[in-house]
Length: 148
Image (cartoon, rainbow, N blue to C red; front, side):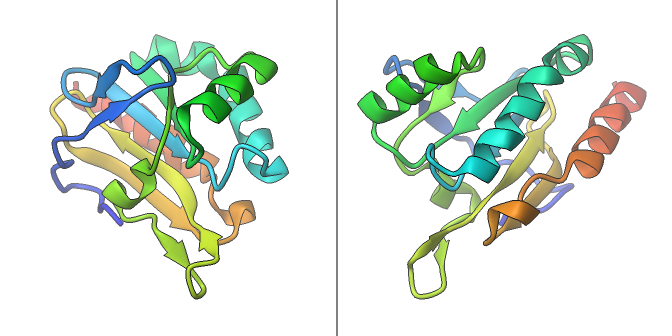
């Protein structure tokens, strides 16, 4: 798992439209879902949607990562009216959120990268109930404002 204070790897990921999504240049919160069908992860995404205004005011874009393929991810995004870009494929492994427990449990979590490419928050969990660290995310977002 990435660590706060370390440089983020130069990730170029792909969204449901096949467009590249780069982390460089803008503060980005990536939320990694266990799966698009995970009810707990979906609840966390709804909380992020509800917080979109606060995050946008802090100049933080939100990106959701799902392990499903592009068609499944696009269908999930449309069905749930997700206003954020959705990354597809296996982006989890790129930040250290691989599968645990004999490869059966996809980890989920969040990573906040500032505009300079430094990880400001990183949190992951094997169980989705522990993957969304709202207090940690918003504390890191608040610190972005004081260091900008």
